[in-house]
Length: 239
Ligand SMILES: C[S@@+](CC[C@H](N)C(=O)[O-])C[C@H]1O[C@@H](n2cnc3c(N)ncnc32)[C@H](O)[C@@H]1O
Image 1: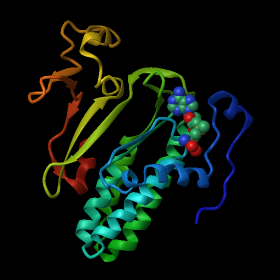
Image 2 (image 1 turned 135 degrees about the vertical axis):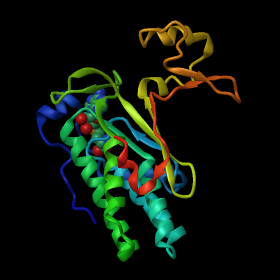
Image 3 (image 1 turned 60 degrees about the horizontal axis):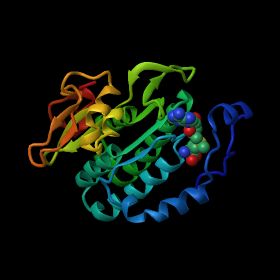
């Protein structure tokens, strides 16, 4: 059981960034409101002001609980699905120290469960893969401007990028990187489409950011980068 921790770090941080951490009881109660989703191994969660990960940590624990229930008799299946659980959780925070703490906390939880369940089957490459996934998924940025920030929390001219991780076979993961600002406009009314494009500096036809879904014929976000499928223990091969 985690010890009870203070909900604030300093008056300045509360004043400048509204940093007040949510107590464990409220975190659990709120996660209970979406209990089934928290227990669905591949359901994607994003916390846009994640702090040091109070919600993300609880969601990860619940997902890993579901992995254990389903795959307790097979370390190989447990491992793959525990990696899948890690790929599905995303966070943003404007303060670098929170981001670093959040990633470390998530890894500690993940590794504790992995070690307990997989024992001698555990593999350090998998641990490195999960650290890499958390590094990509928990990002330092401004969730209002959708830009990355420097160590003072000031916006820099780089959009927040999120990686989508998909198992494309039993053991291969494919990663595609997307701009967060484009993802948020996924459901844009096509009537507004031209206007939305101008937000990104407008290319003539928007093809830098969007592509047409061959099935629905609707515009969908275009990845800024795609990587070849890779064995799930080696996702860190492509930075
Ligand atoms: C109220 S705290 C909540 C932290 C965490 N979600 C929790 O419930 O314990 C708000 C968090 O948002 C972060 N924050 C403030 N402004 C932000 C912004 N524009 N973009 C991203 N994070 C921001 C702060 O650093 C702080 O960690």
